[in-house]
Length: 452
Ligand code: F0G
Image 1 (tube, rainbow, N blue to C red):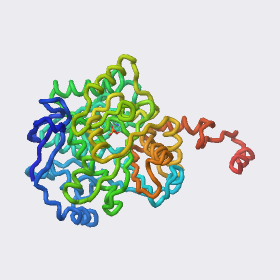
Image 2 (image 1 turned 45 degrees about the horizontal axis):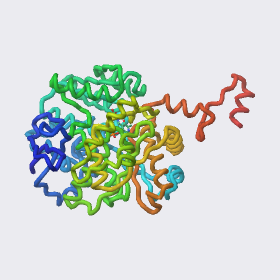
Image 3 (image 1 turned 60 degrees about the vertical axis):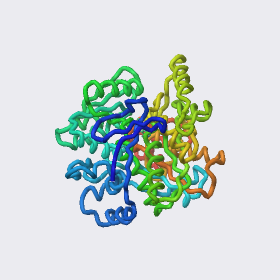
């Protein structure tokens, strides 16, 4: 089996060994893929099943490394098990489940509709999947410092994985000031990361990270790093495993920096070429209306991958106009409050290869959907609820059809952003508000409130 890095543009010939840190093509400036050749997949599915039933190590338990032959970039290394990064095998213990009330809410039958709660990862978001892989690569390169820009979840996951290396790795985090949910900031501080608040938003922090990473030789953990995306592919392996490797009709995911959607598309293309599945699902990416770069580029500007020739000029003039008008992303779903998604071009490739849709939802649609998810005894943060709100909209528009099988990915945990939840439930105008009843400390009044 051979591994290399390759530029995503079919017109560019750049390829490189994986023992370097490169996050953009030095020839044309575009993104890179990790590419594998010479894999024999004939026993993969039995192997994954066996490890799940009889794990022999934390890597067999891990929901990421259990599938290591499908992200085998470290397997050619000597003593590769010492390199594999894992939070004691706890990452990726998620699988798709049916939730009756949410199915009703989106207008689907429960048996056709699954949600996968990636918020139930050790640090409370899907980012743990990607960090397991990216930290493994950082260890292969003997890196001692890692950096990311974040709206909060990437940073929490990165800080935890760095702390787990027991003093051998320092985490440095750039965040936009006032742009991060409290639960997420609390995590990064507690895990001992160096947190730098930049006066600006996520996009400012992101562009600073790329410059500082290059200048100081610090390993960049954002999703421009193709090894991060290798780990995130496993979200789809678990979805498929939960469906007995039957490919659903739709995968639905929120869109922020577009790393998740890009990795999902890569996972399906690879599985298909390995002969492990015979079709790919459609992928729906859901933007917040207040942070809708992808929605506008695809649905209004008609930008597409265009067989590897996306209209870069049109994209640039879209961004120039955005800057001129000083249009900034603004949404309660701070996780996806992003103007310039770094994986835009990869996401366009996925939409062309898999087919699908890009939808947008309002803050209130997300918050209502989030409250309905909560009523089922599960929870997610506002950005994750974009998935449920988006499915509801796509069903209503007839784009997702009744009888189709849908897996929605809920990306982050409910407790990441308790402020948004409390604000929703204490506003009696909200449809699903469940506000606390205040009474005097008087038994009659208390009993009256209990009975009401
Ligand atoms: N949902 C949550 C909870 C997120 O934290 C993010 C991204 C997304 C969805 C969007 O995923 O970027 O792969 O399209 N959070 C990043 C961060 C930006 O810094 O934590 P994407």
